[in-house]
Length: 209
Ligand SMILES: NC(=O)c1ccc[n+]([C@@H]2O[C@H](COP(=O)([O-])OP(=O)(O)OC[C@H]3O[C@@H](n4cnc5c(N)ncnc54)[C@H](OP(=O)(O)O)[C@@H]3O)[C@@H](O)[C@H]2O)c1
Image 1: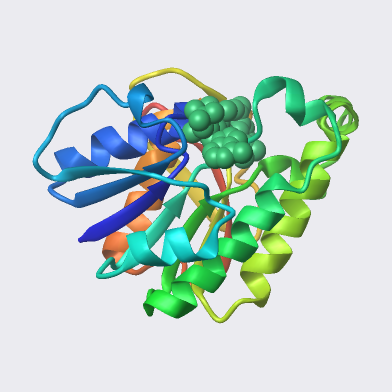
Image 2: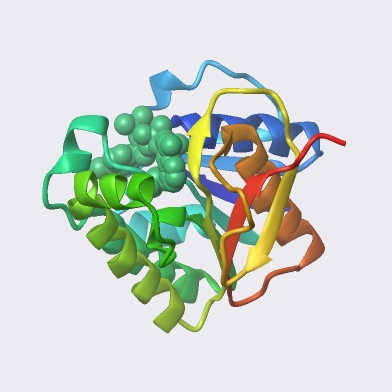
């Protein structure tokens, strides 16, 4: 498949890039800082651009099958009011309409599920501004005509496991942490297998046997 990746220089995005190439896809990394991508591969095209610019995105999207998005605010910005993710979602779905691309899989967060507990409450409070932007981002994506999958993972860690559990519209039991790589695997599985169309999906690390 030809996939356009947003957030390719980020912690989740790097794994999407790596796994996507390993699975034989042709990837376009649409990034603001191409120098951050050291990887060289005949199946990888790096395009410099601003994800807020519909025309740039639409040009880059021509001929692609799907968009995968793992955009996130820089750490210090996550604690301040921001509309970055909602605005990027709006420009992305507009560009997809122009380019005739229907499929998008995007990373959101498990904290948006109404799960009770002290840990969830604390993180929700700490990340109020970021979560507000994620809600707005999800609203834009859901209201679009796109065939979307919104992935809501719990806290992410650097580990090499790719296994995950997924549940439509709910957080799988016992979800606490999972790997960036497993989120990448989930997003790729969705577009490859045409699963979880127009769904919000809770994710968790796969339990060891
Ligand atoms: N990390 C977690 O524990 C966790 C848990 C649950 C959900 N999530 C969600 O997963 C998503 C991705 O998280 P992550 O930790 O992989 O993110 P990350 O490592 O911080 O990467 C963020 C990506 O977004 C890009 N970006 C940020 N601002 C941009 C801008 N103004 N224009 C263009 N690109 C911009 C960054 O590009 P540059 O390299 O150019 O800055 C980078 O590629 C986030 O939305 C987050 O809510 C994360």
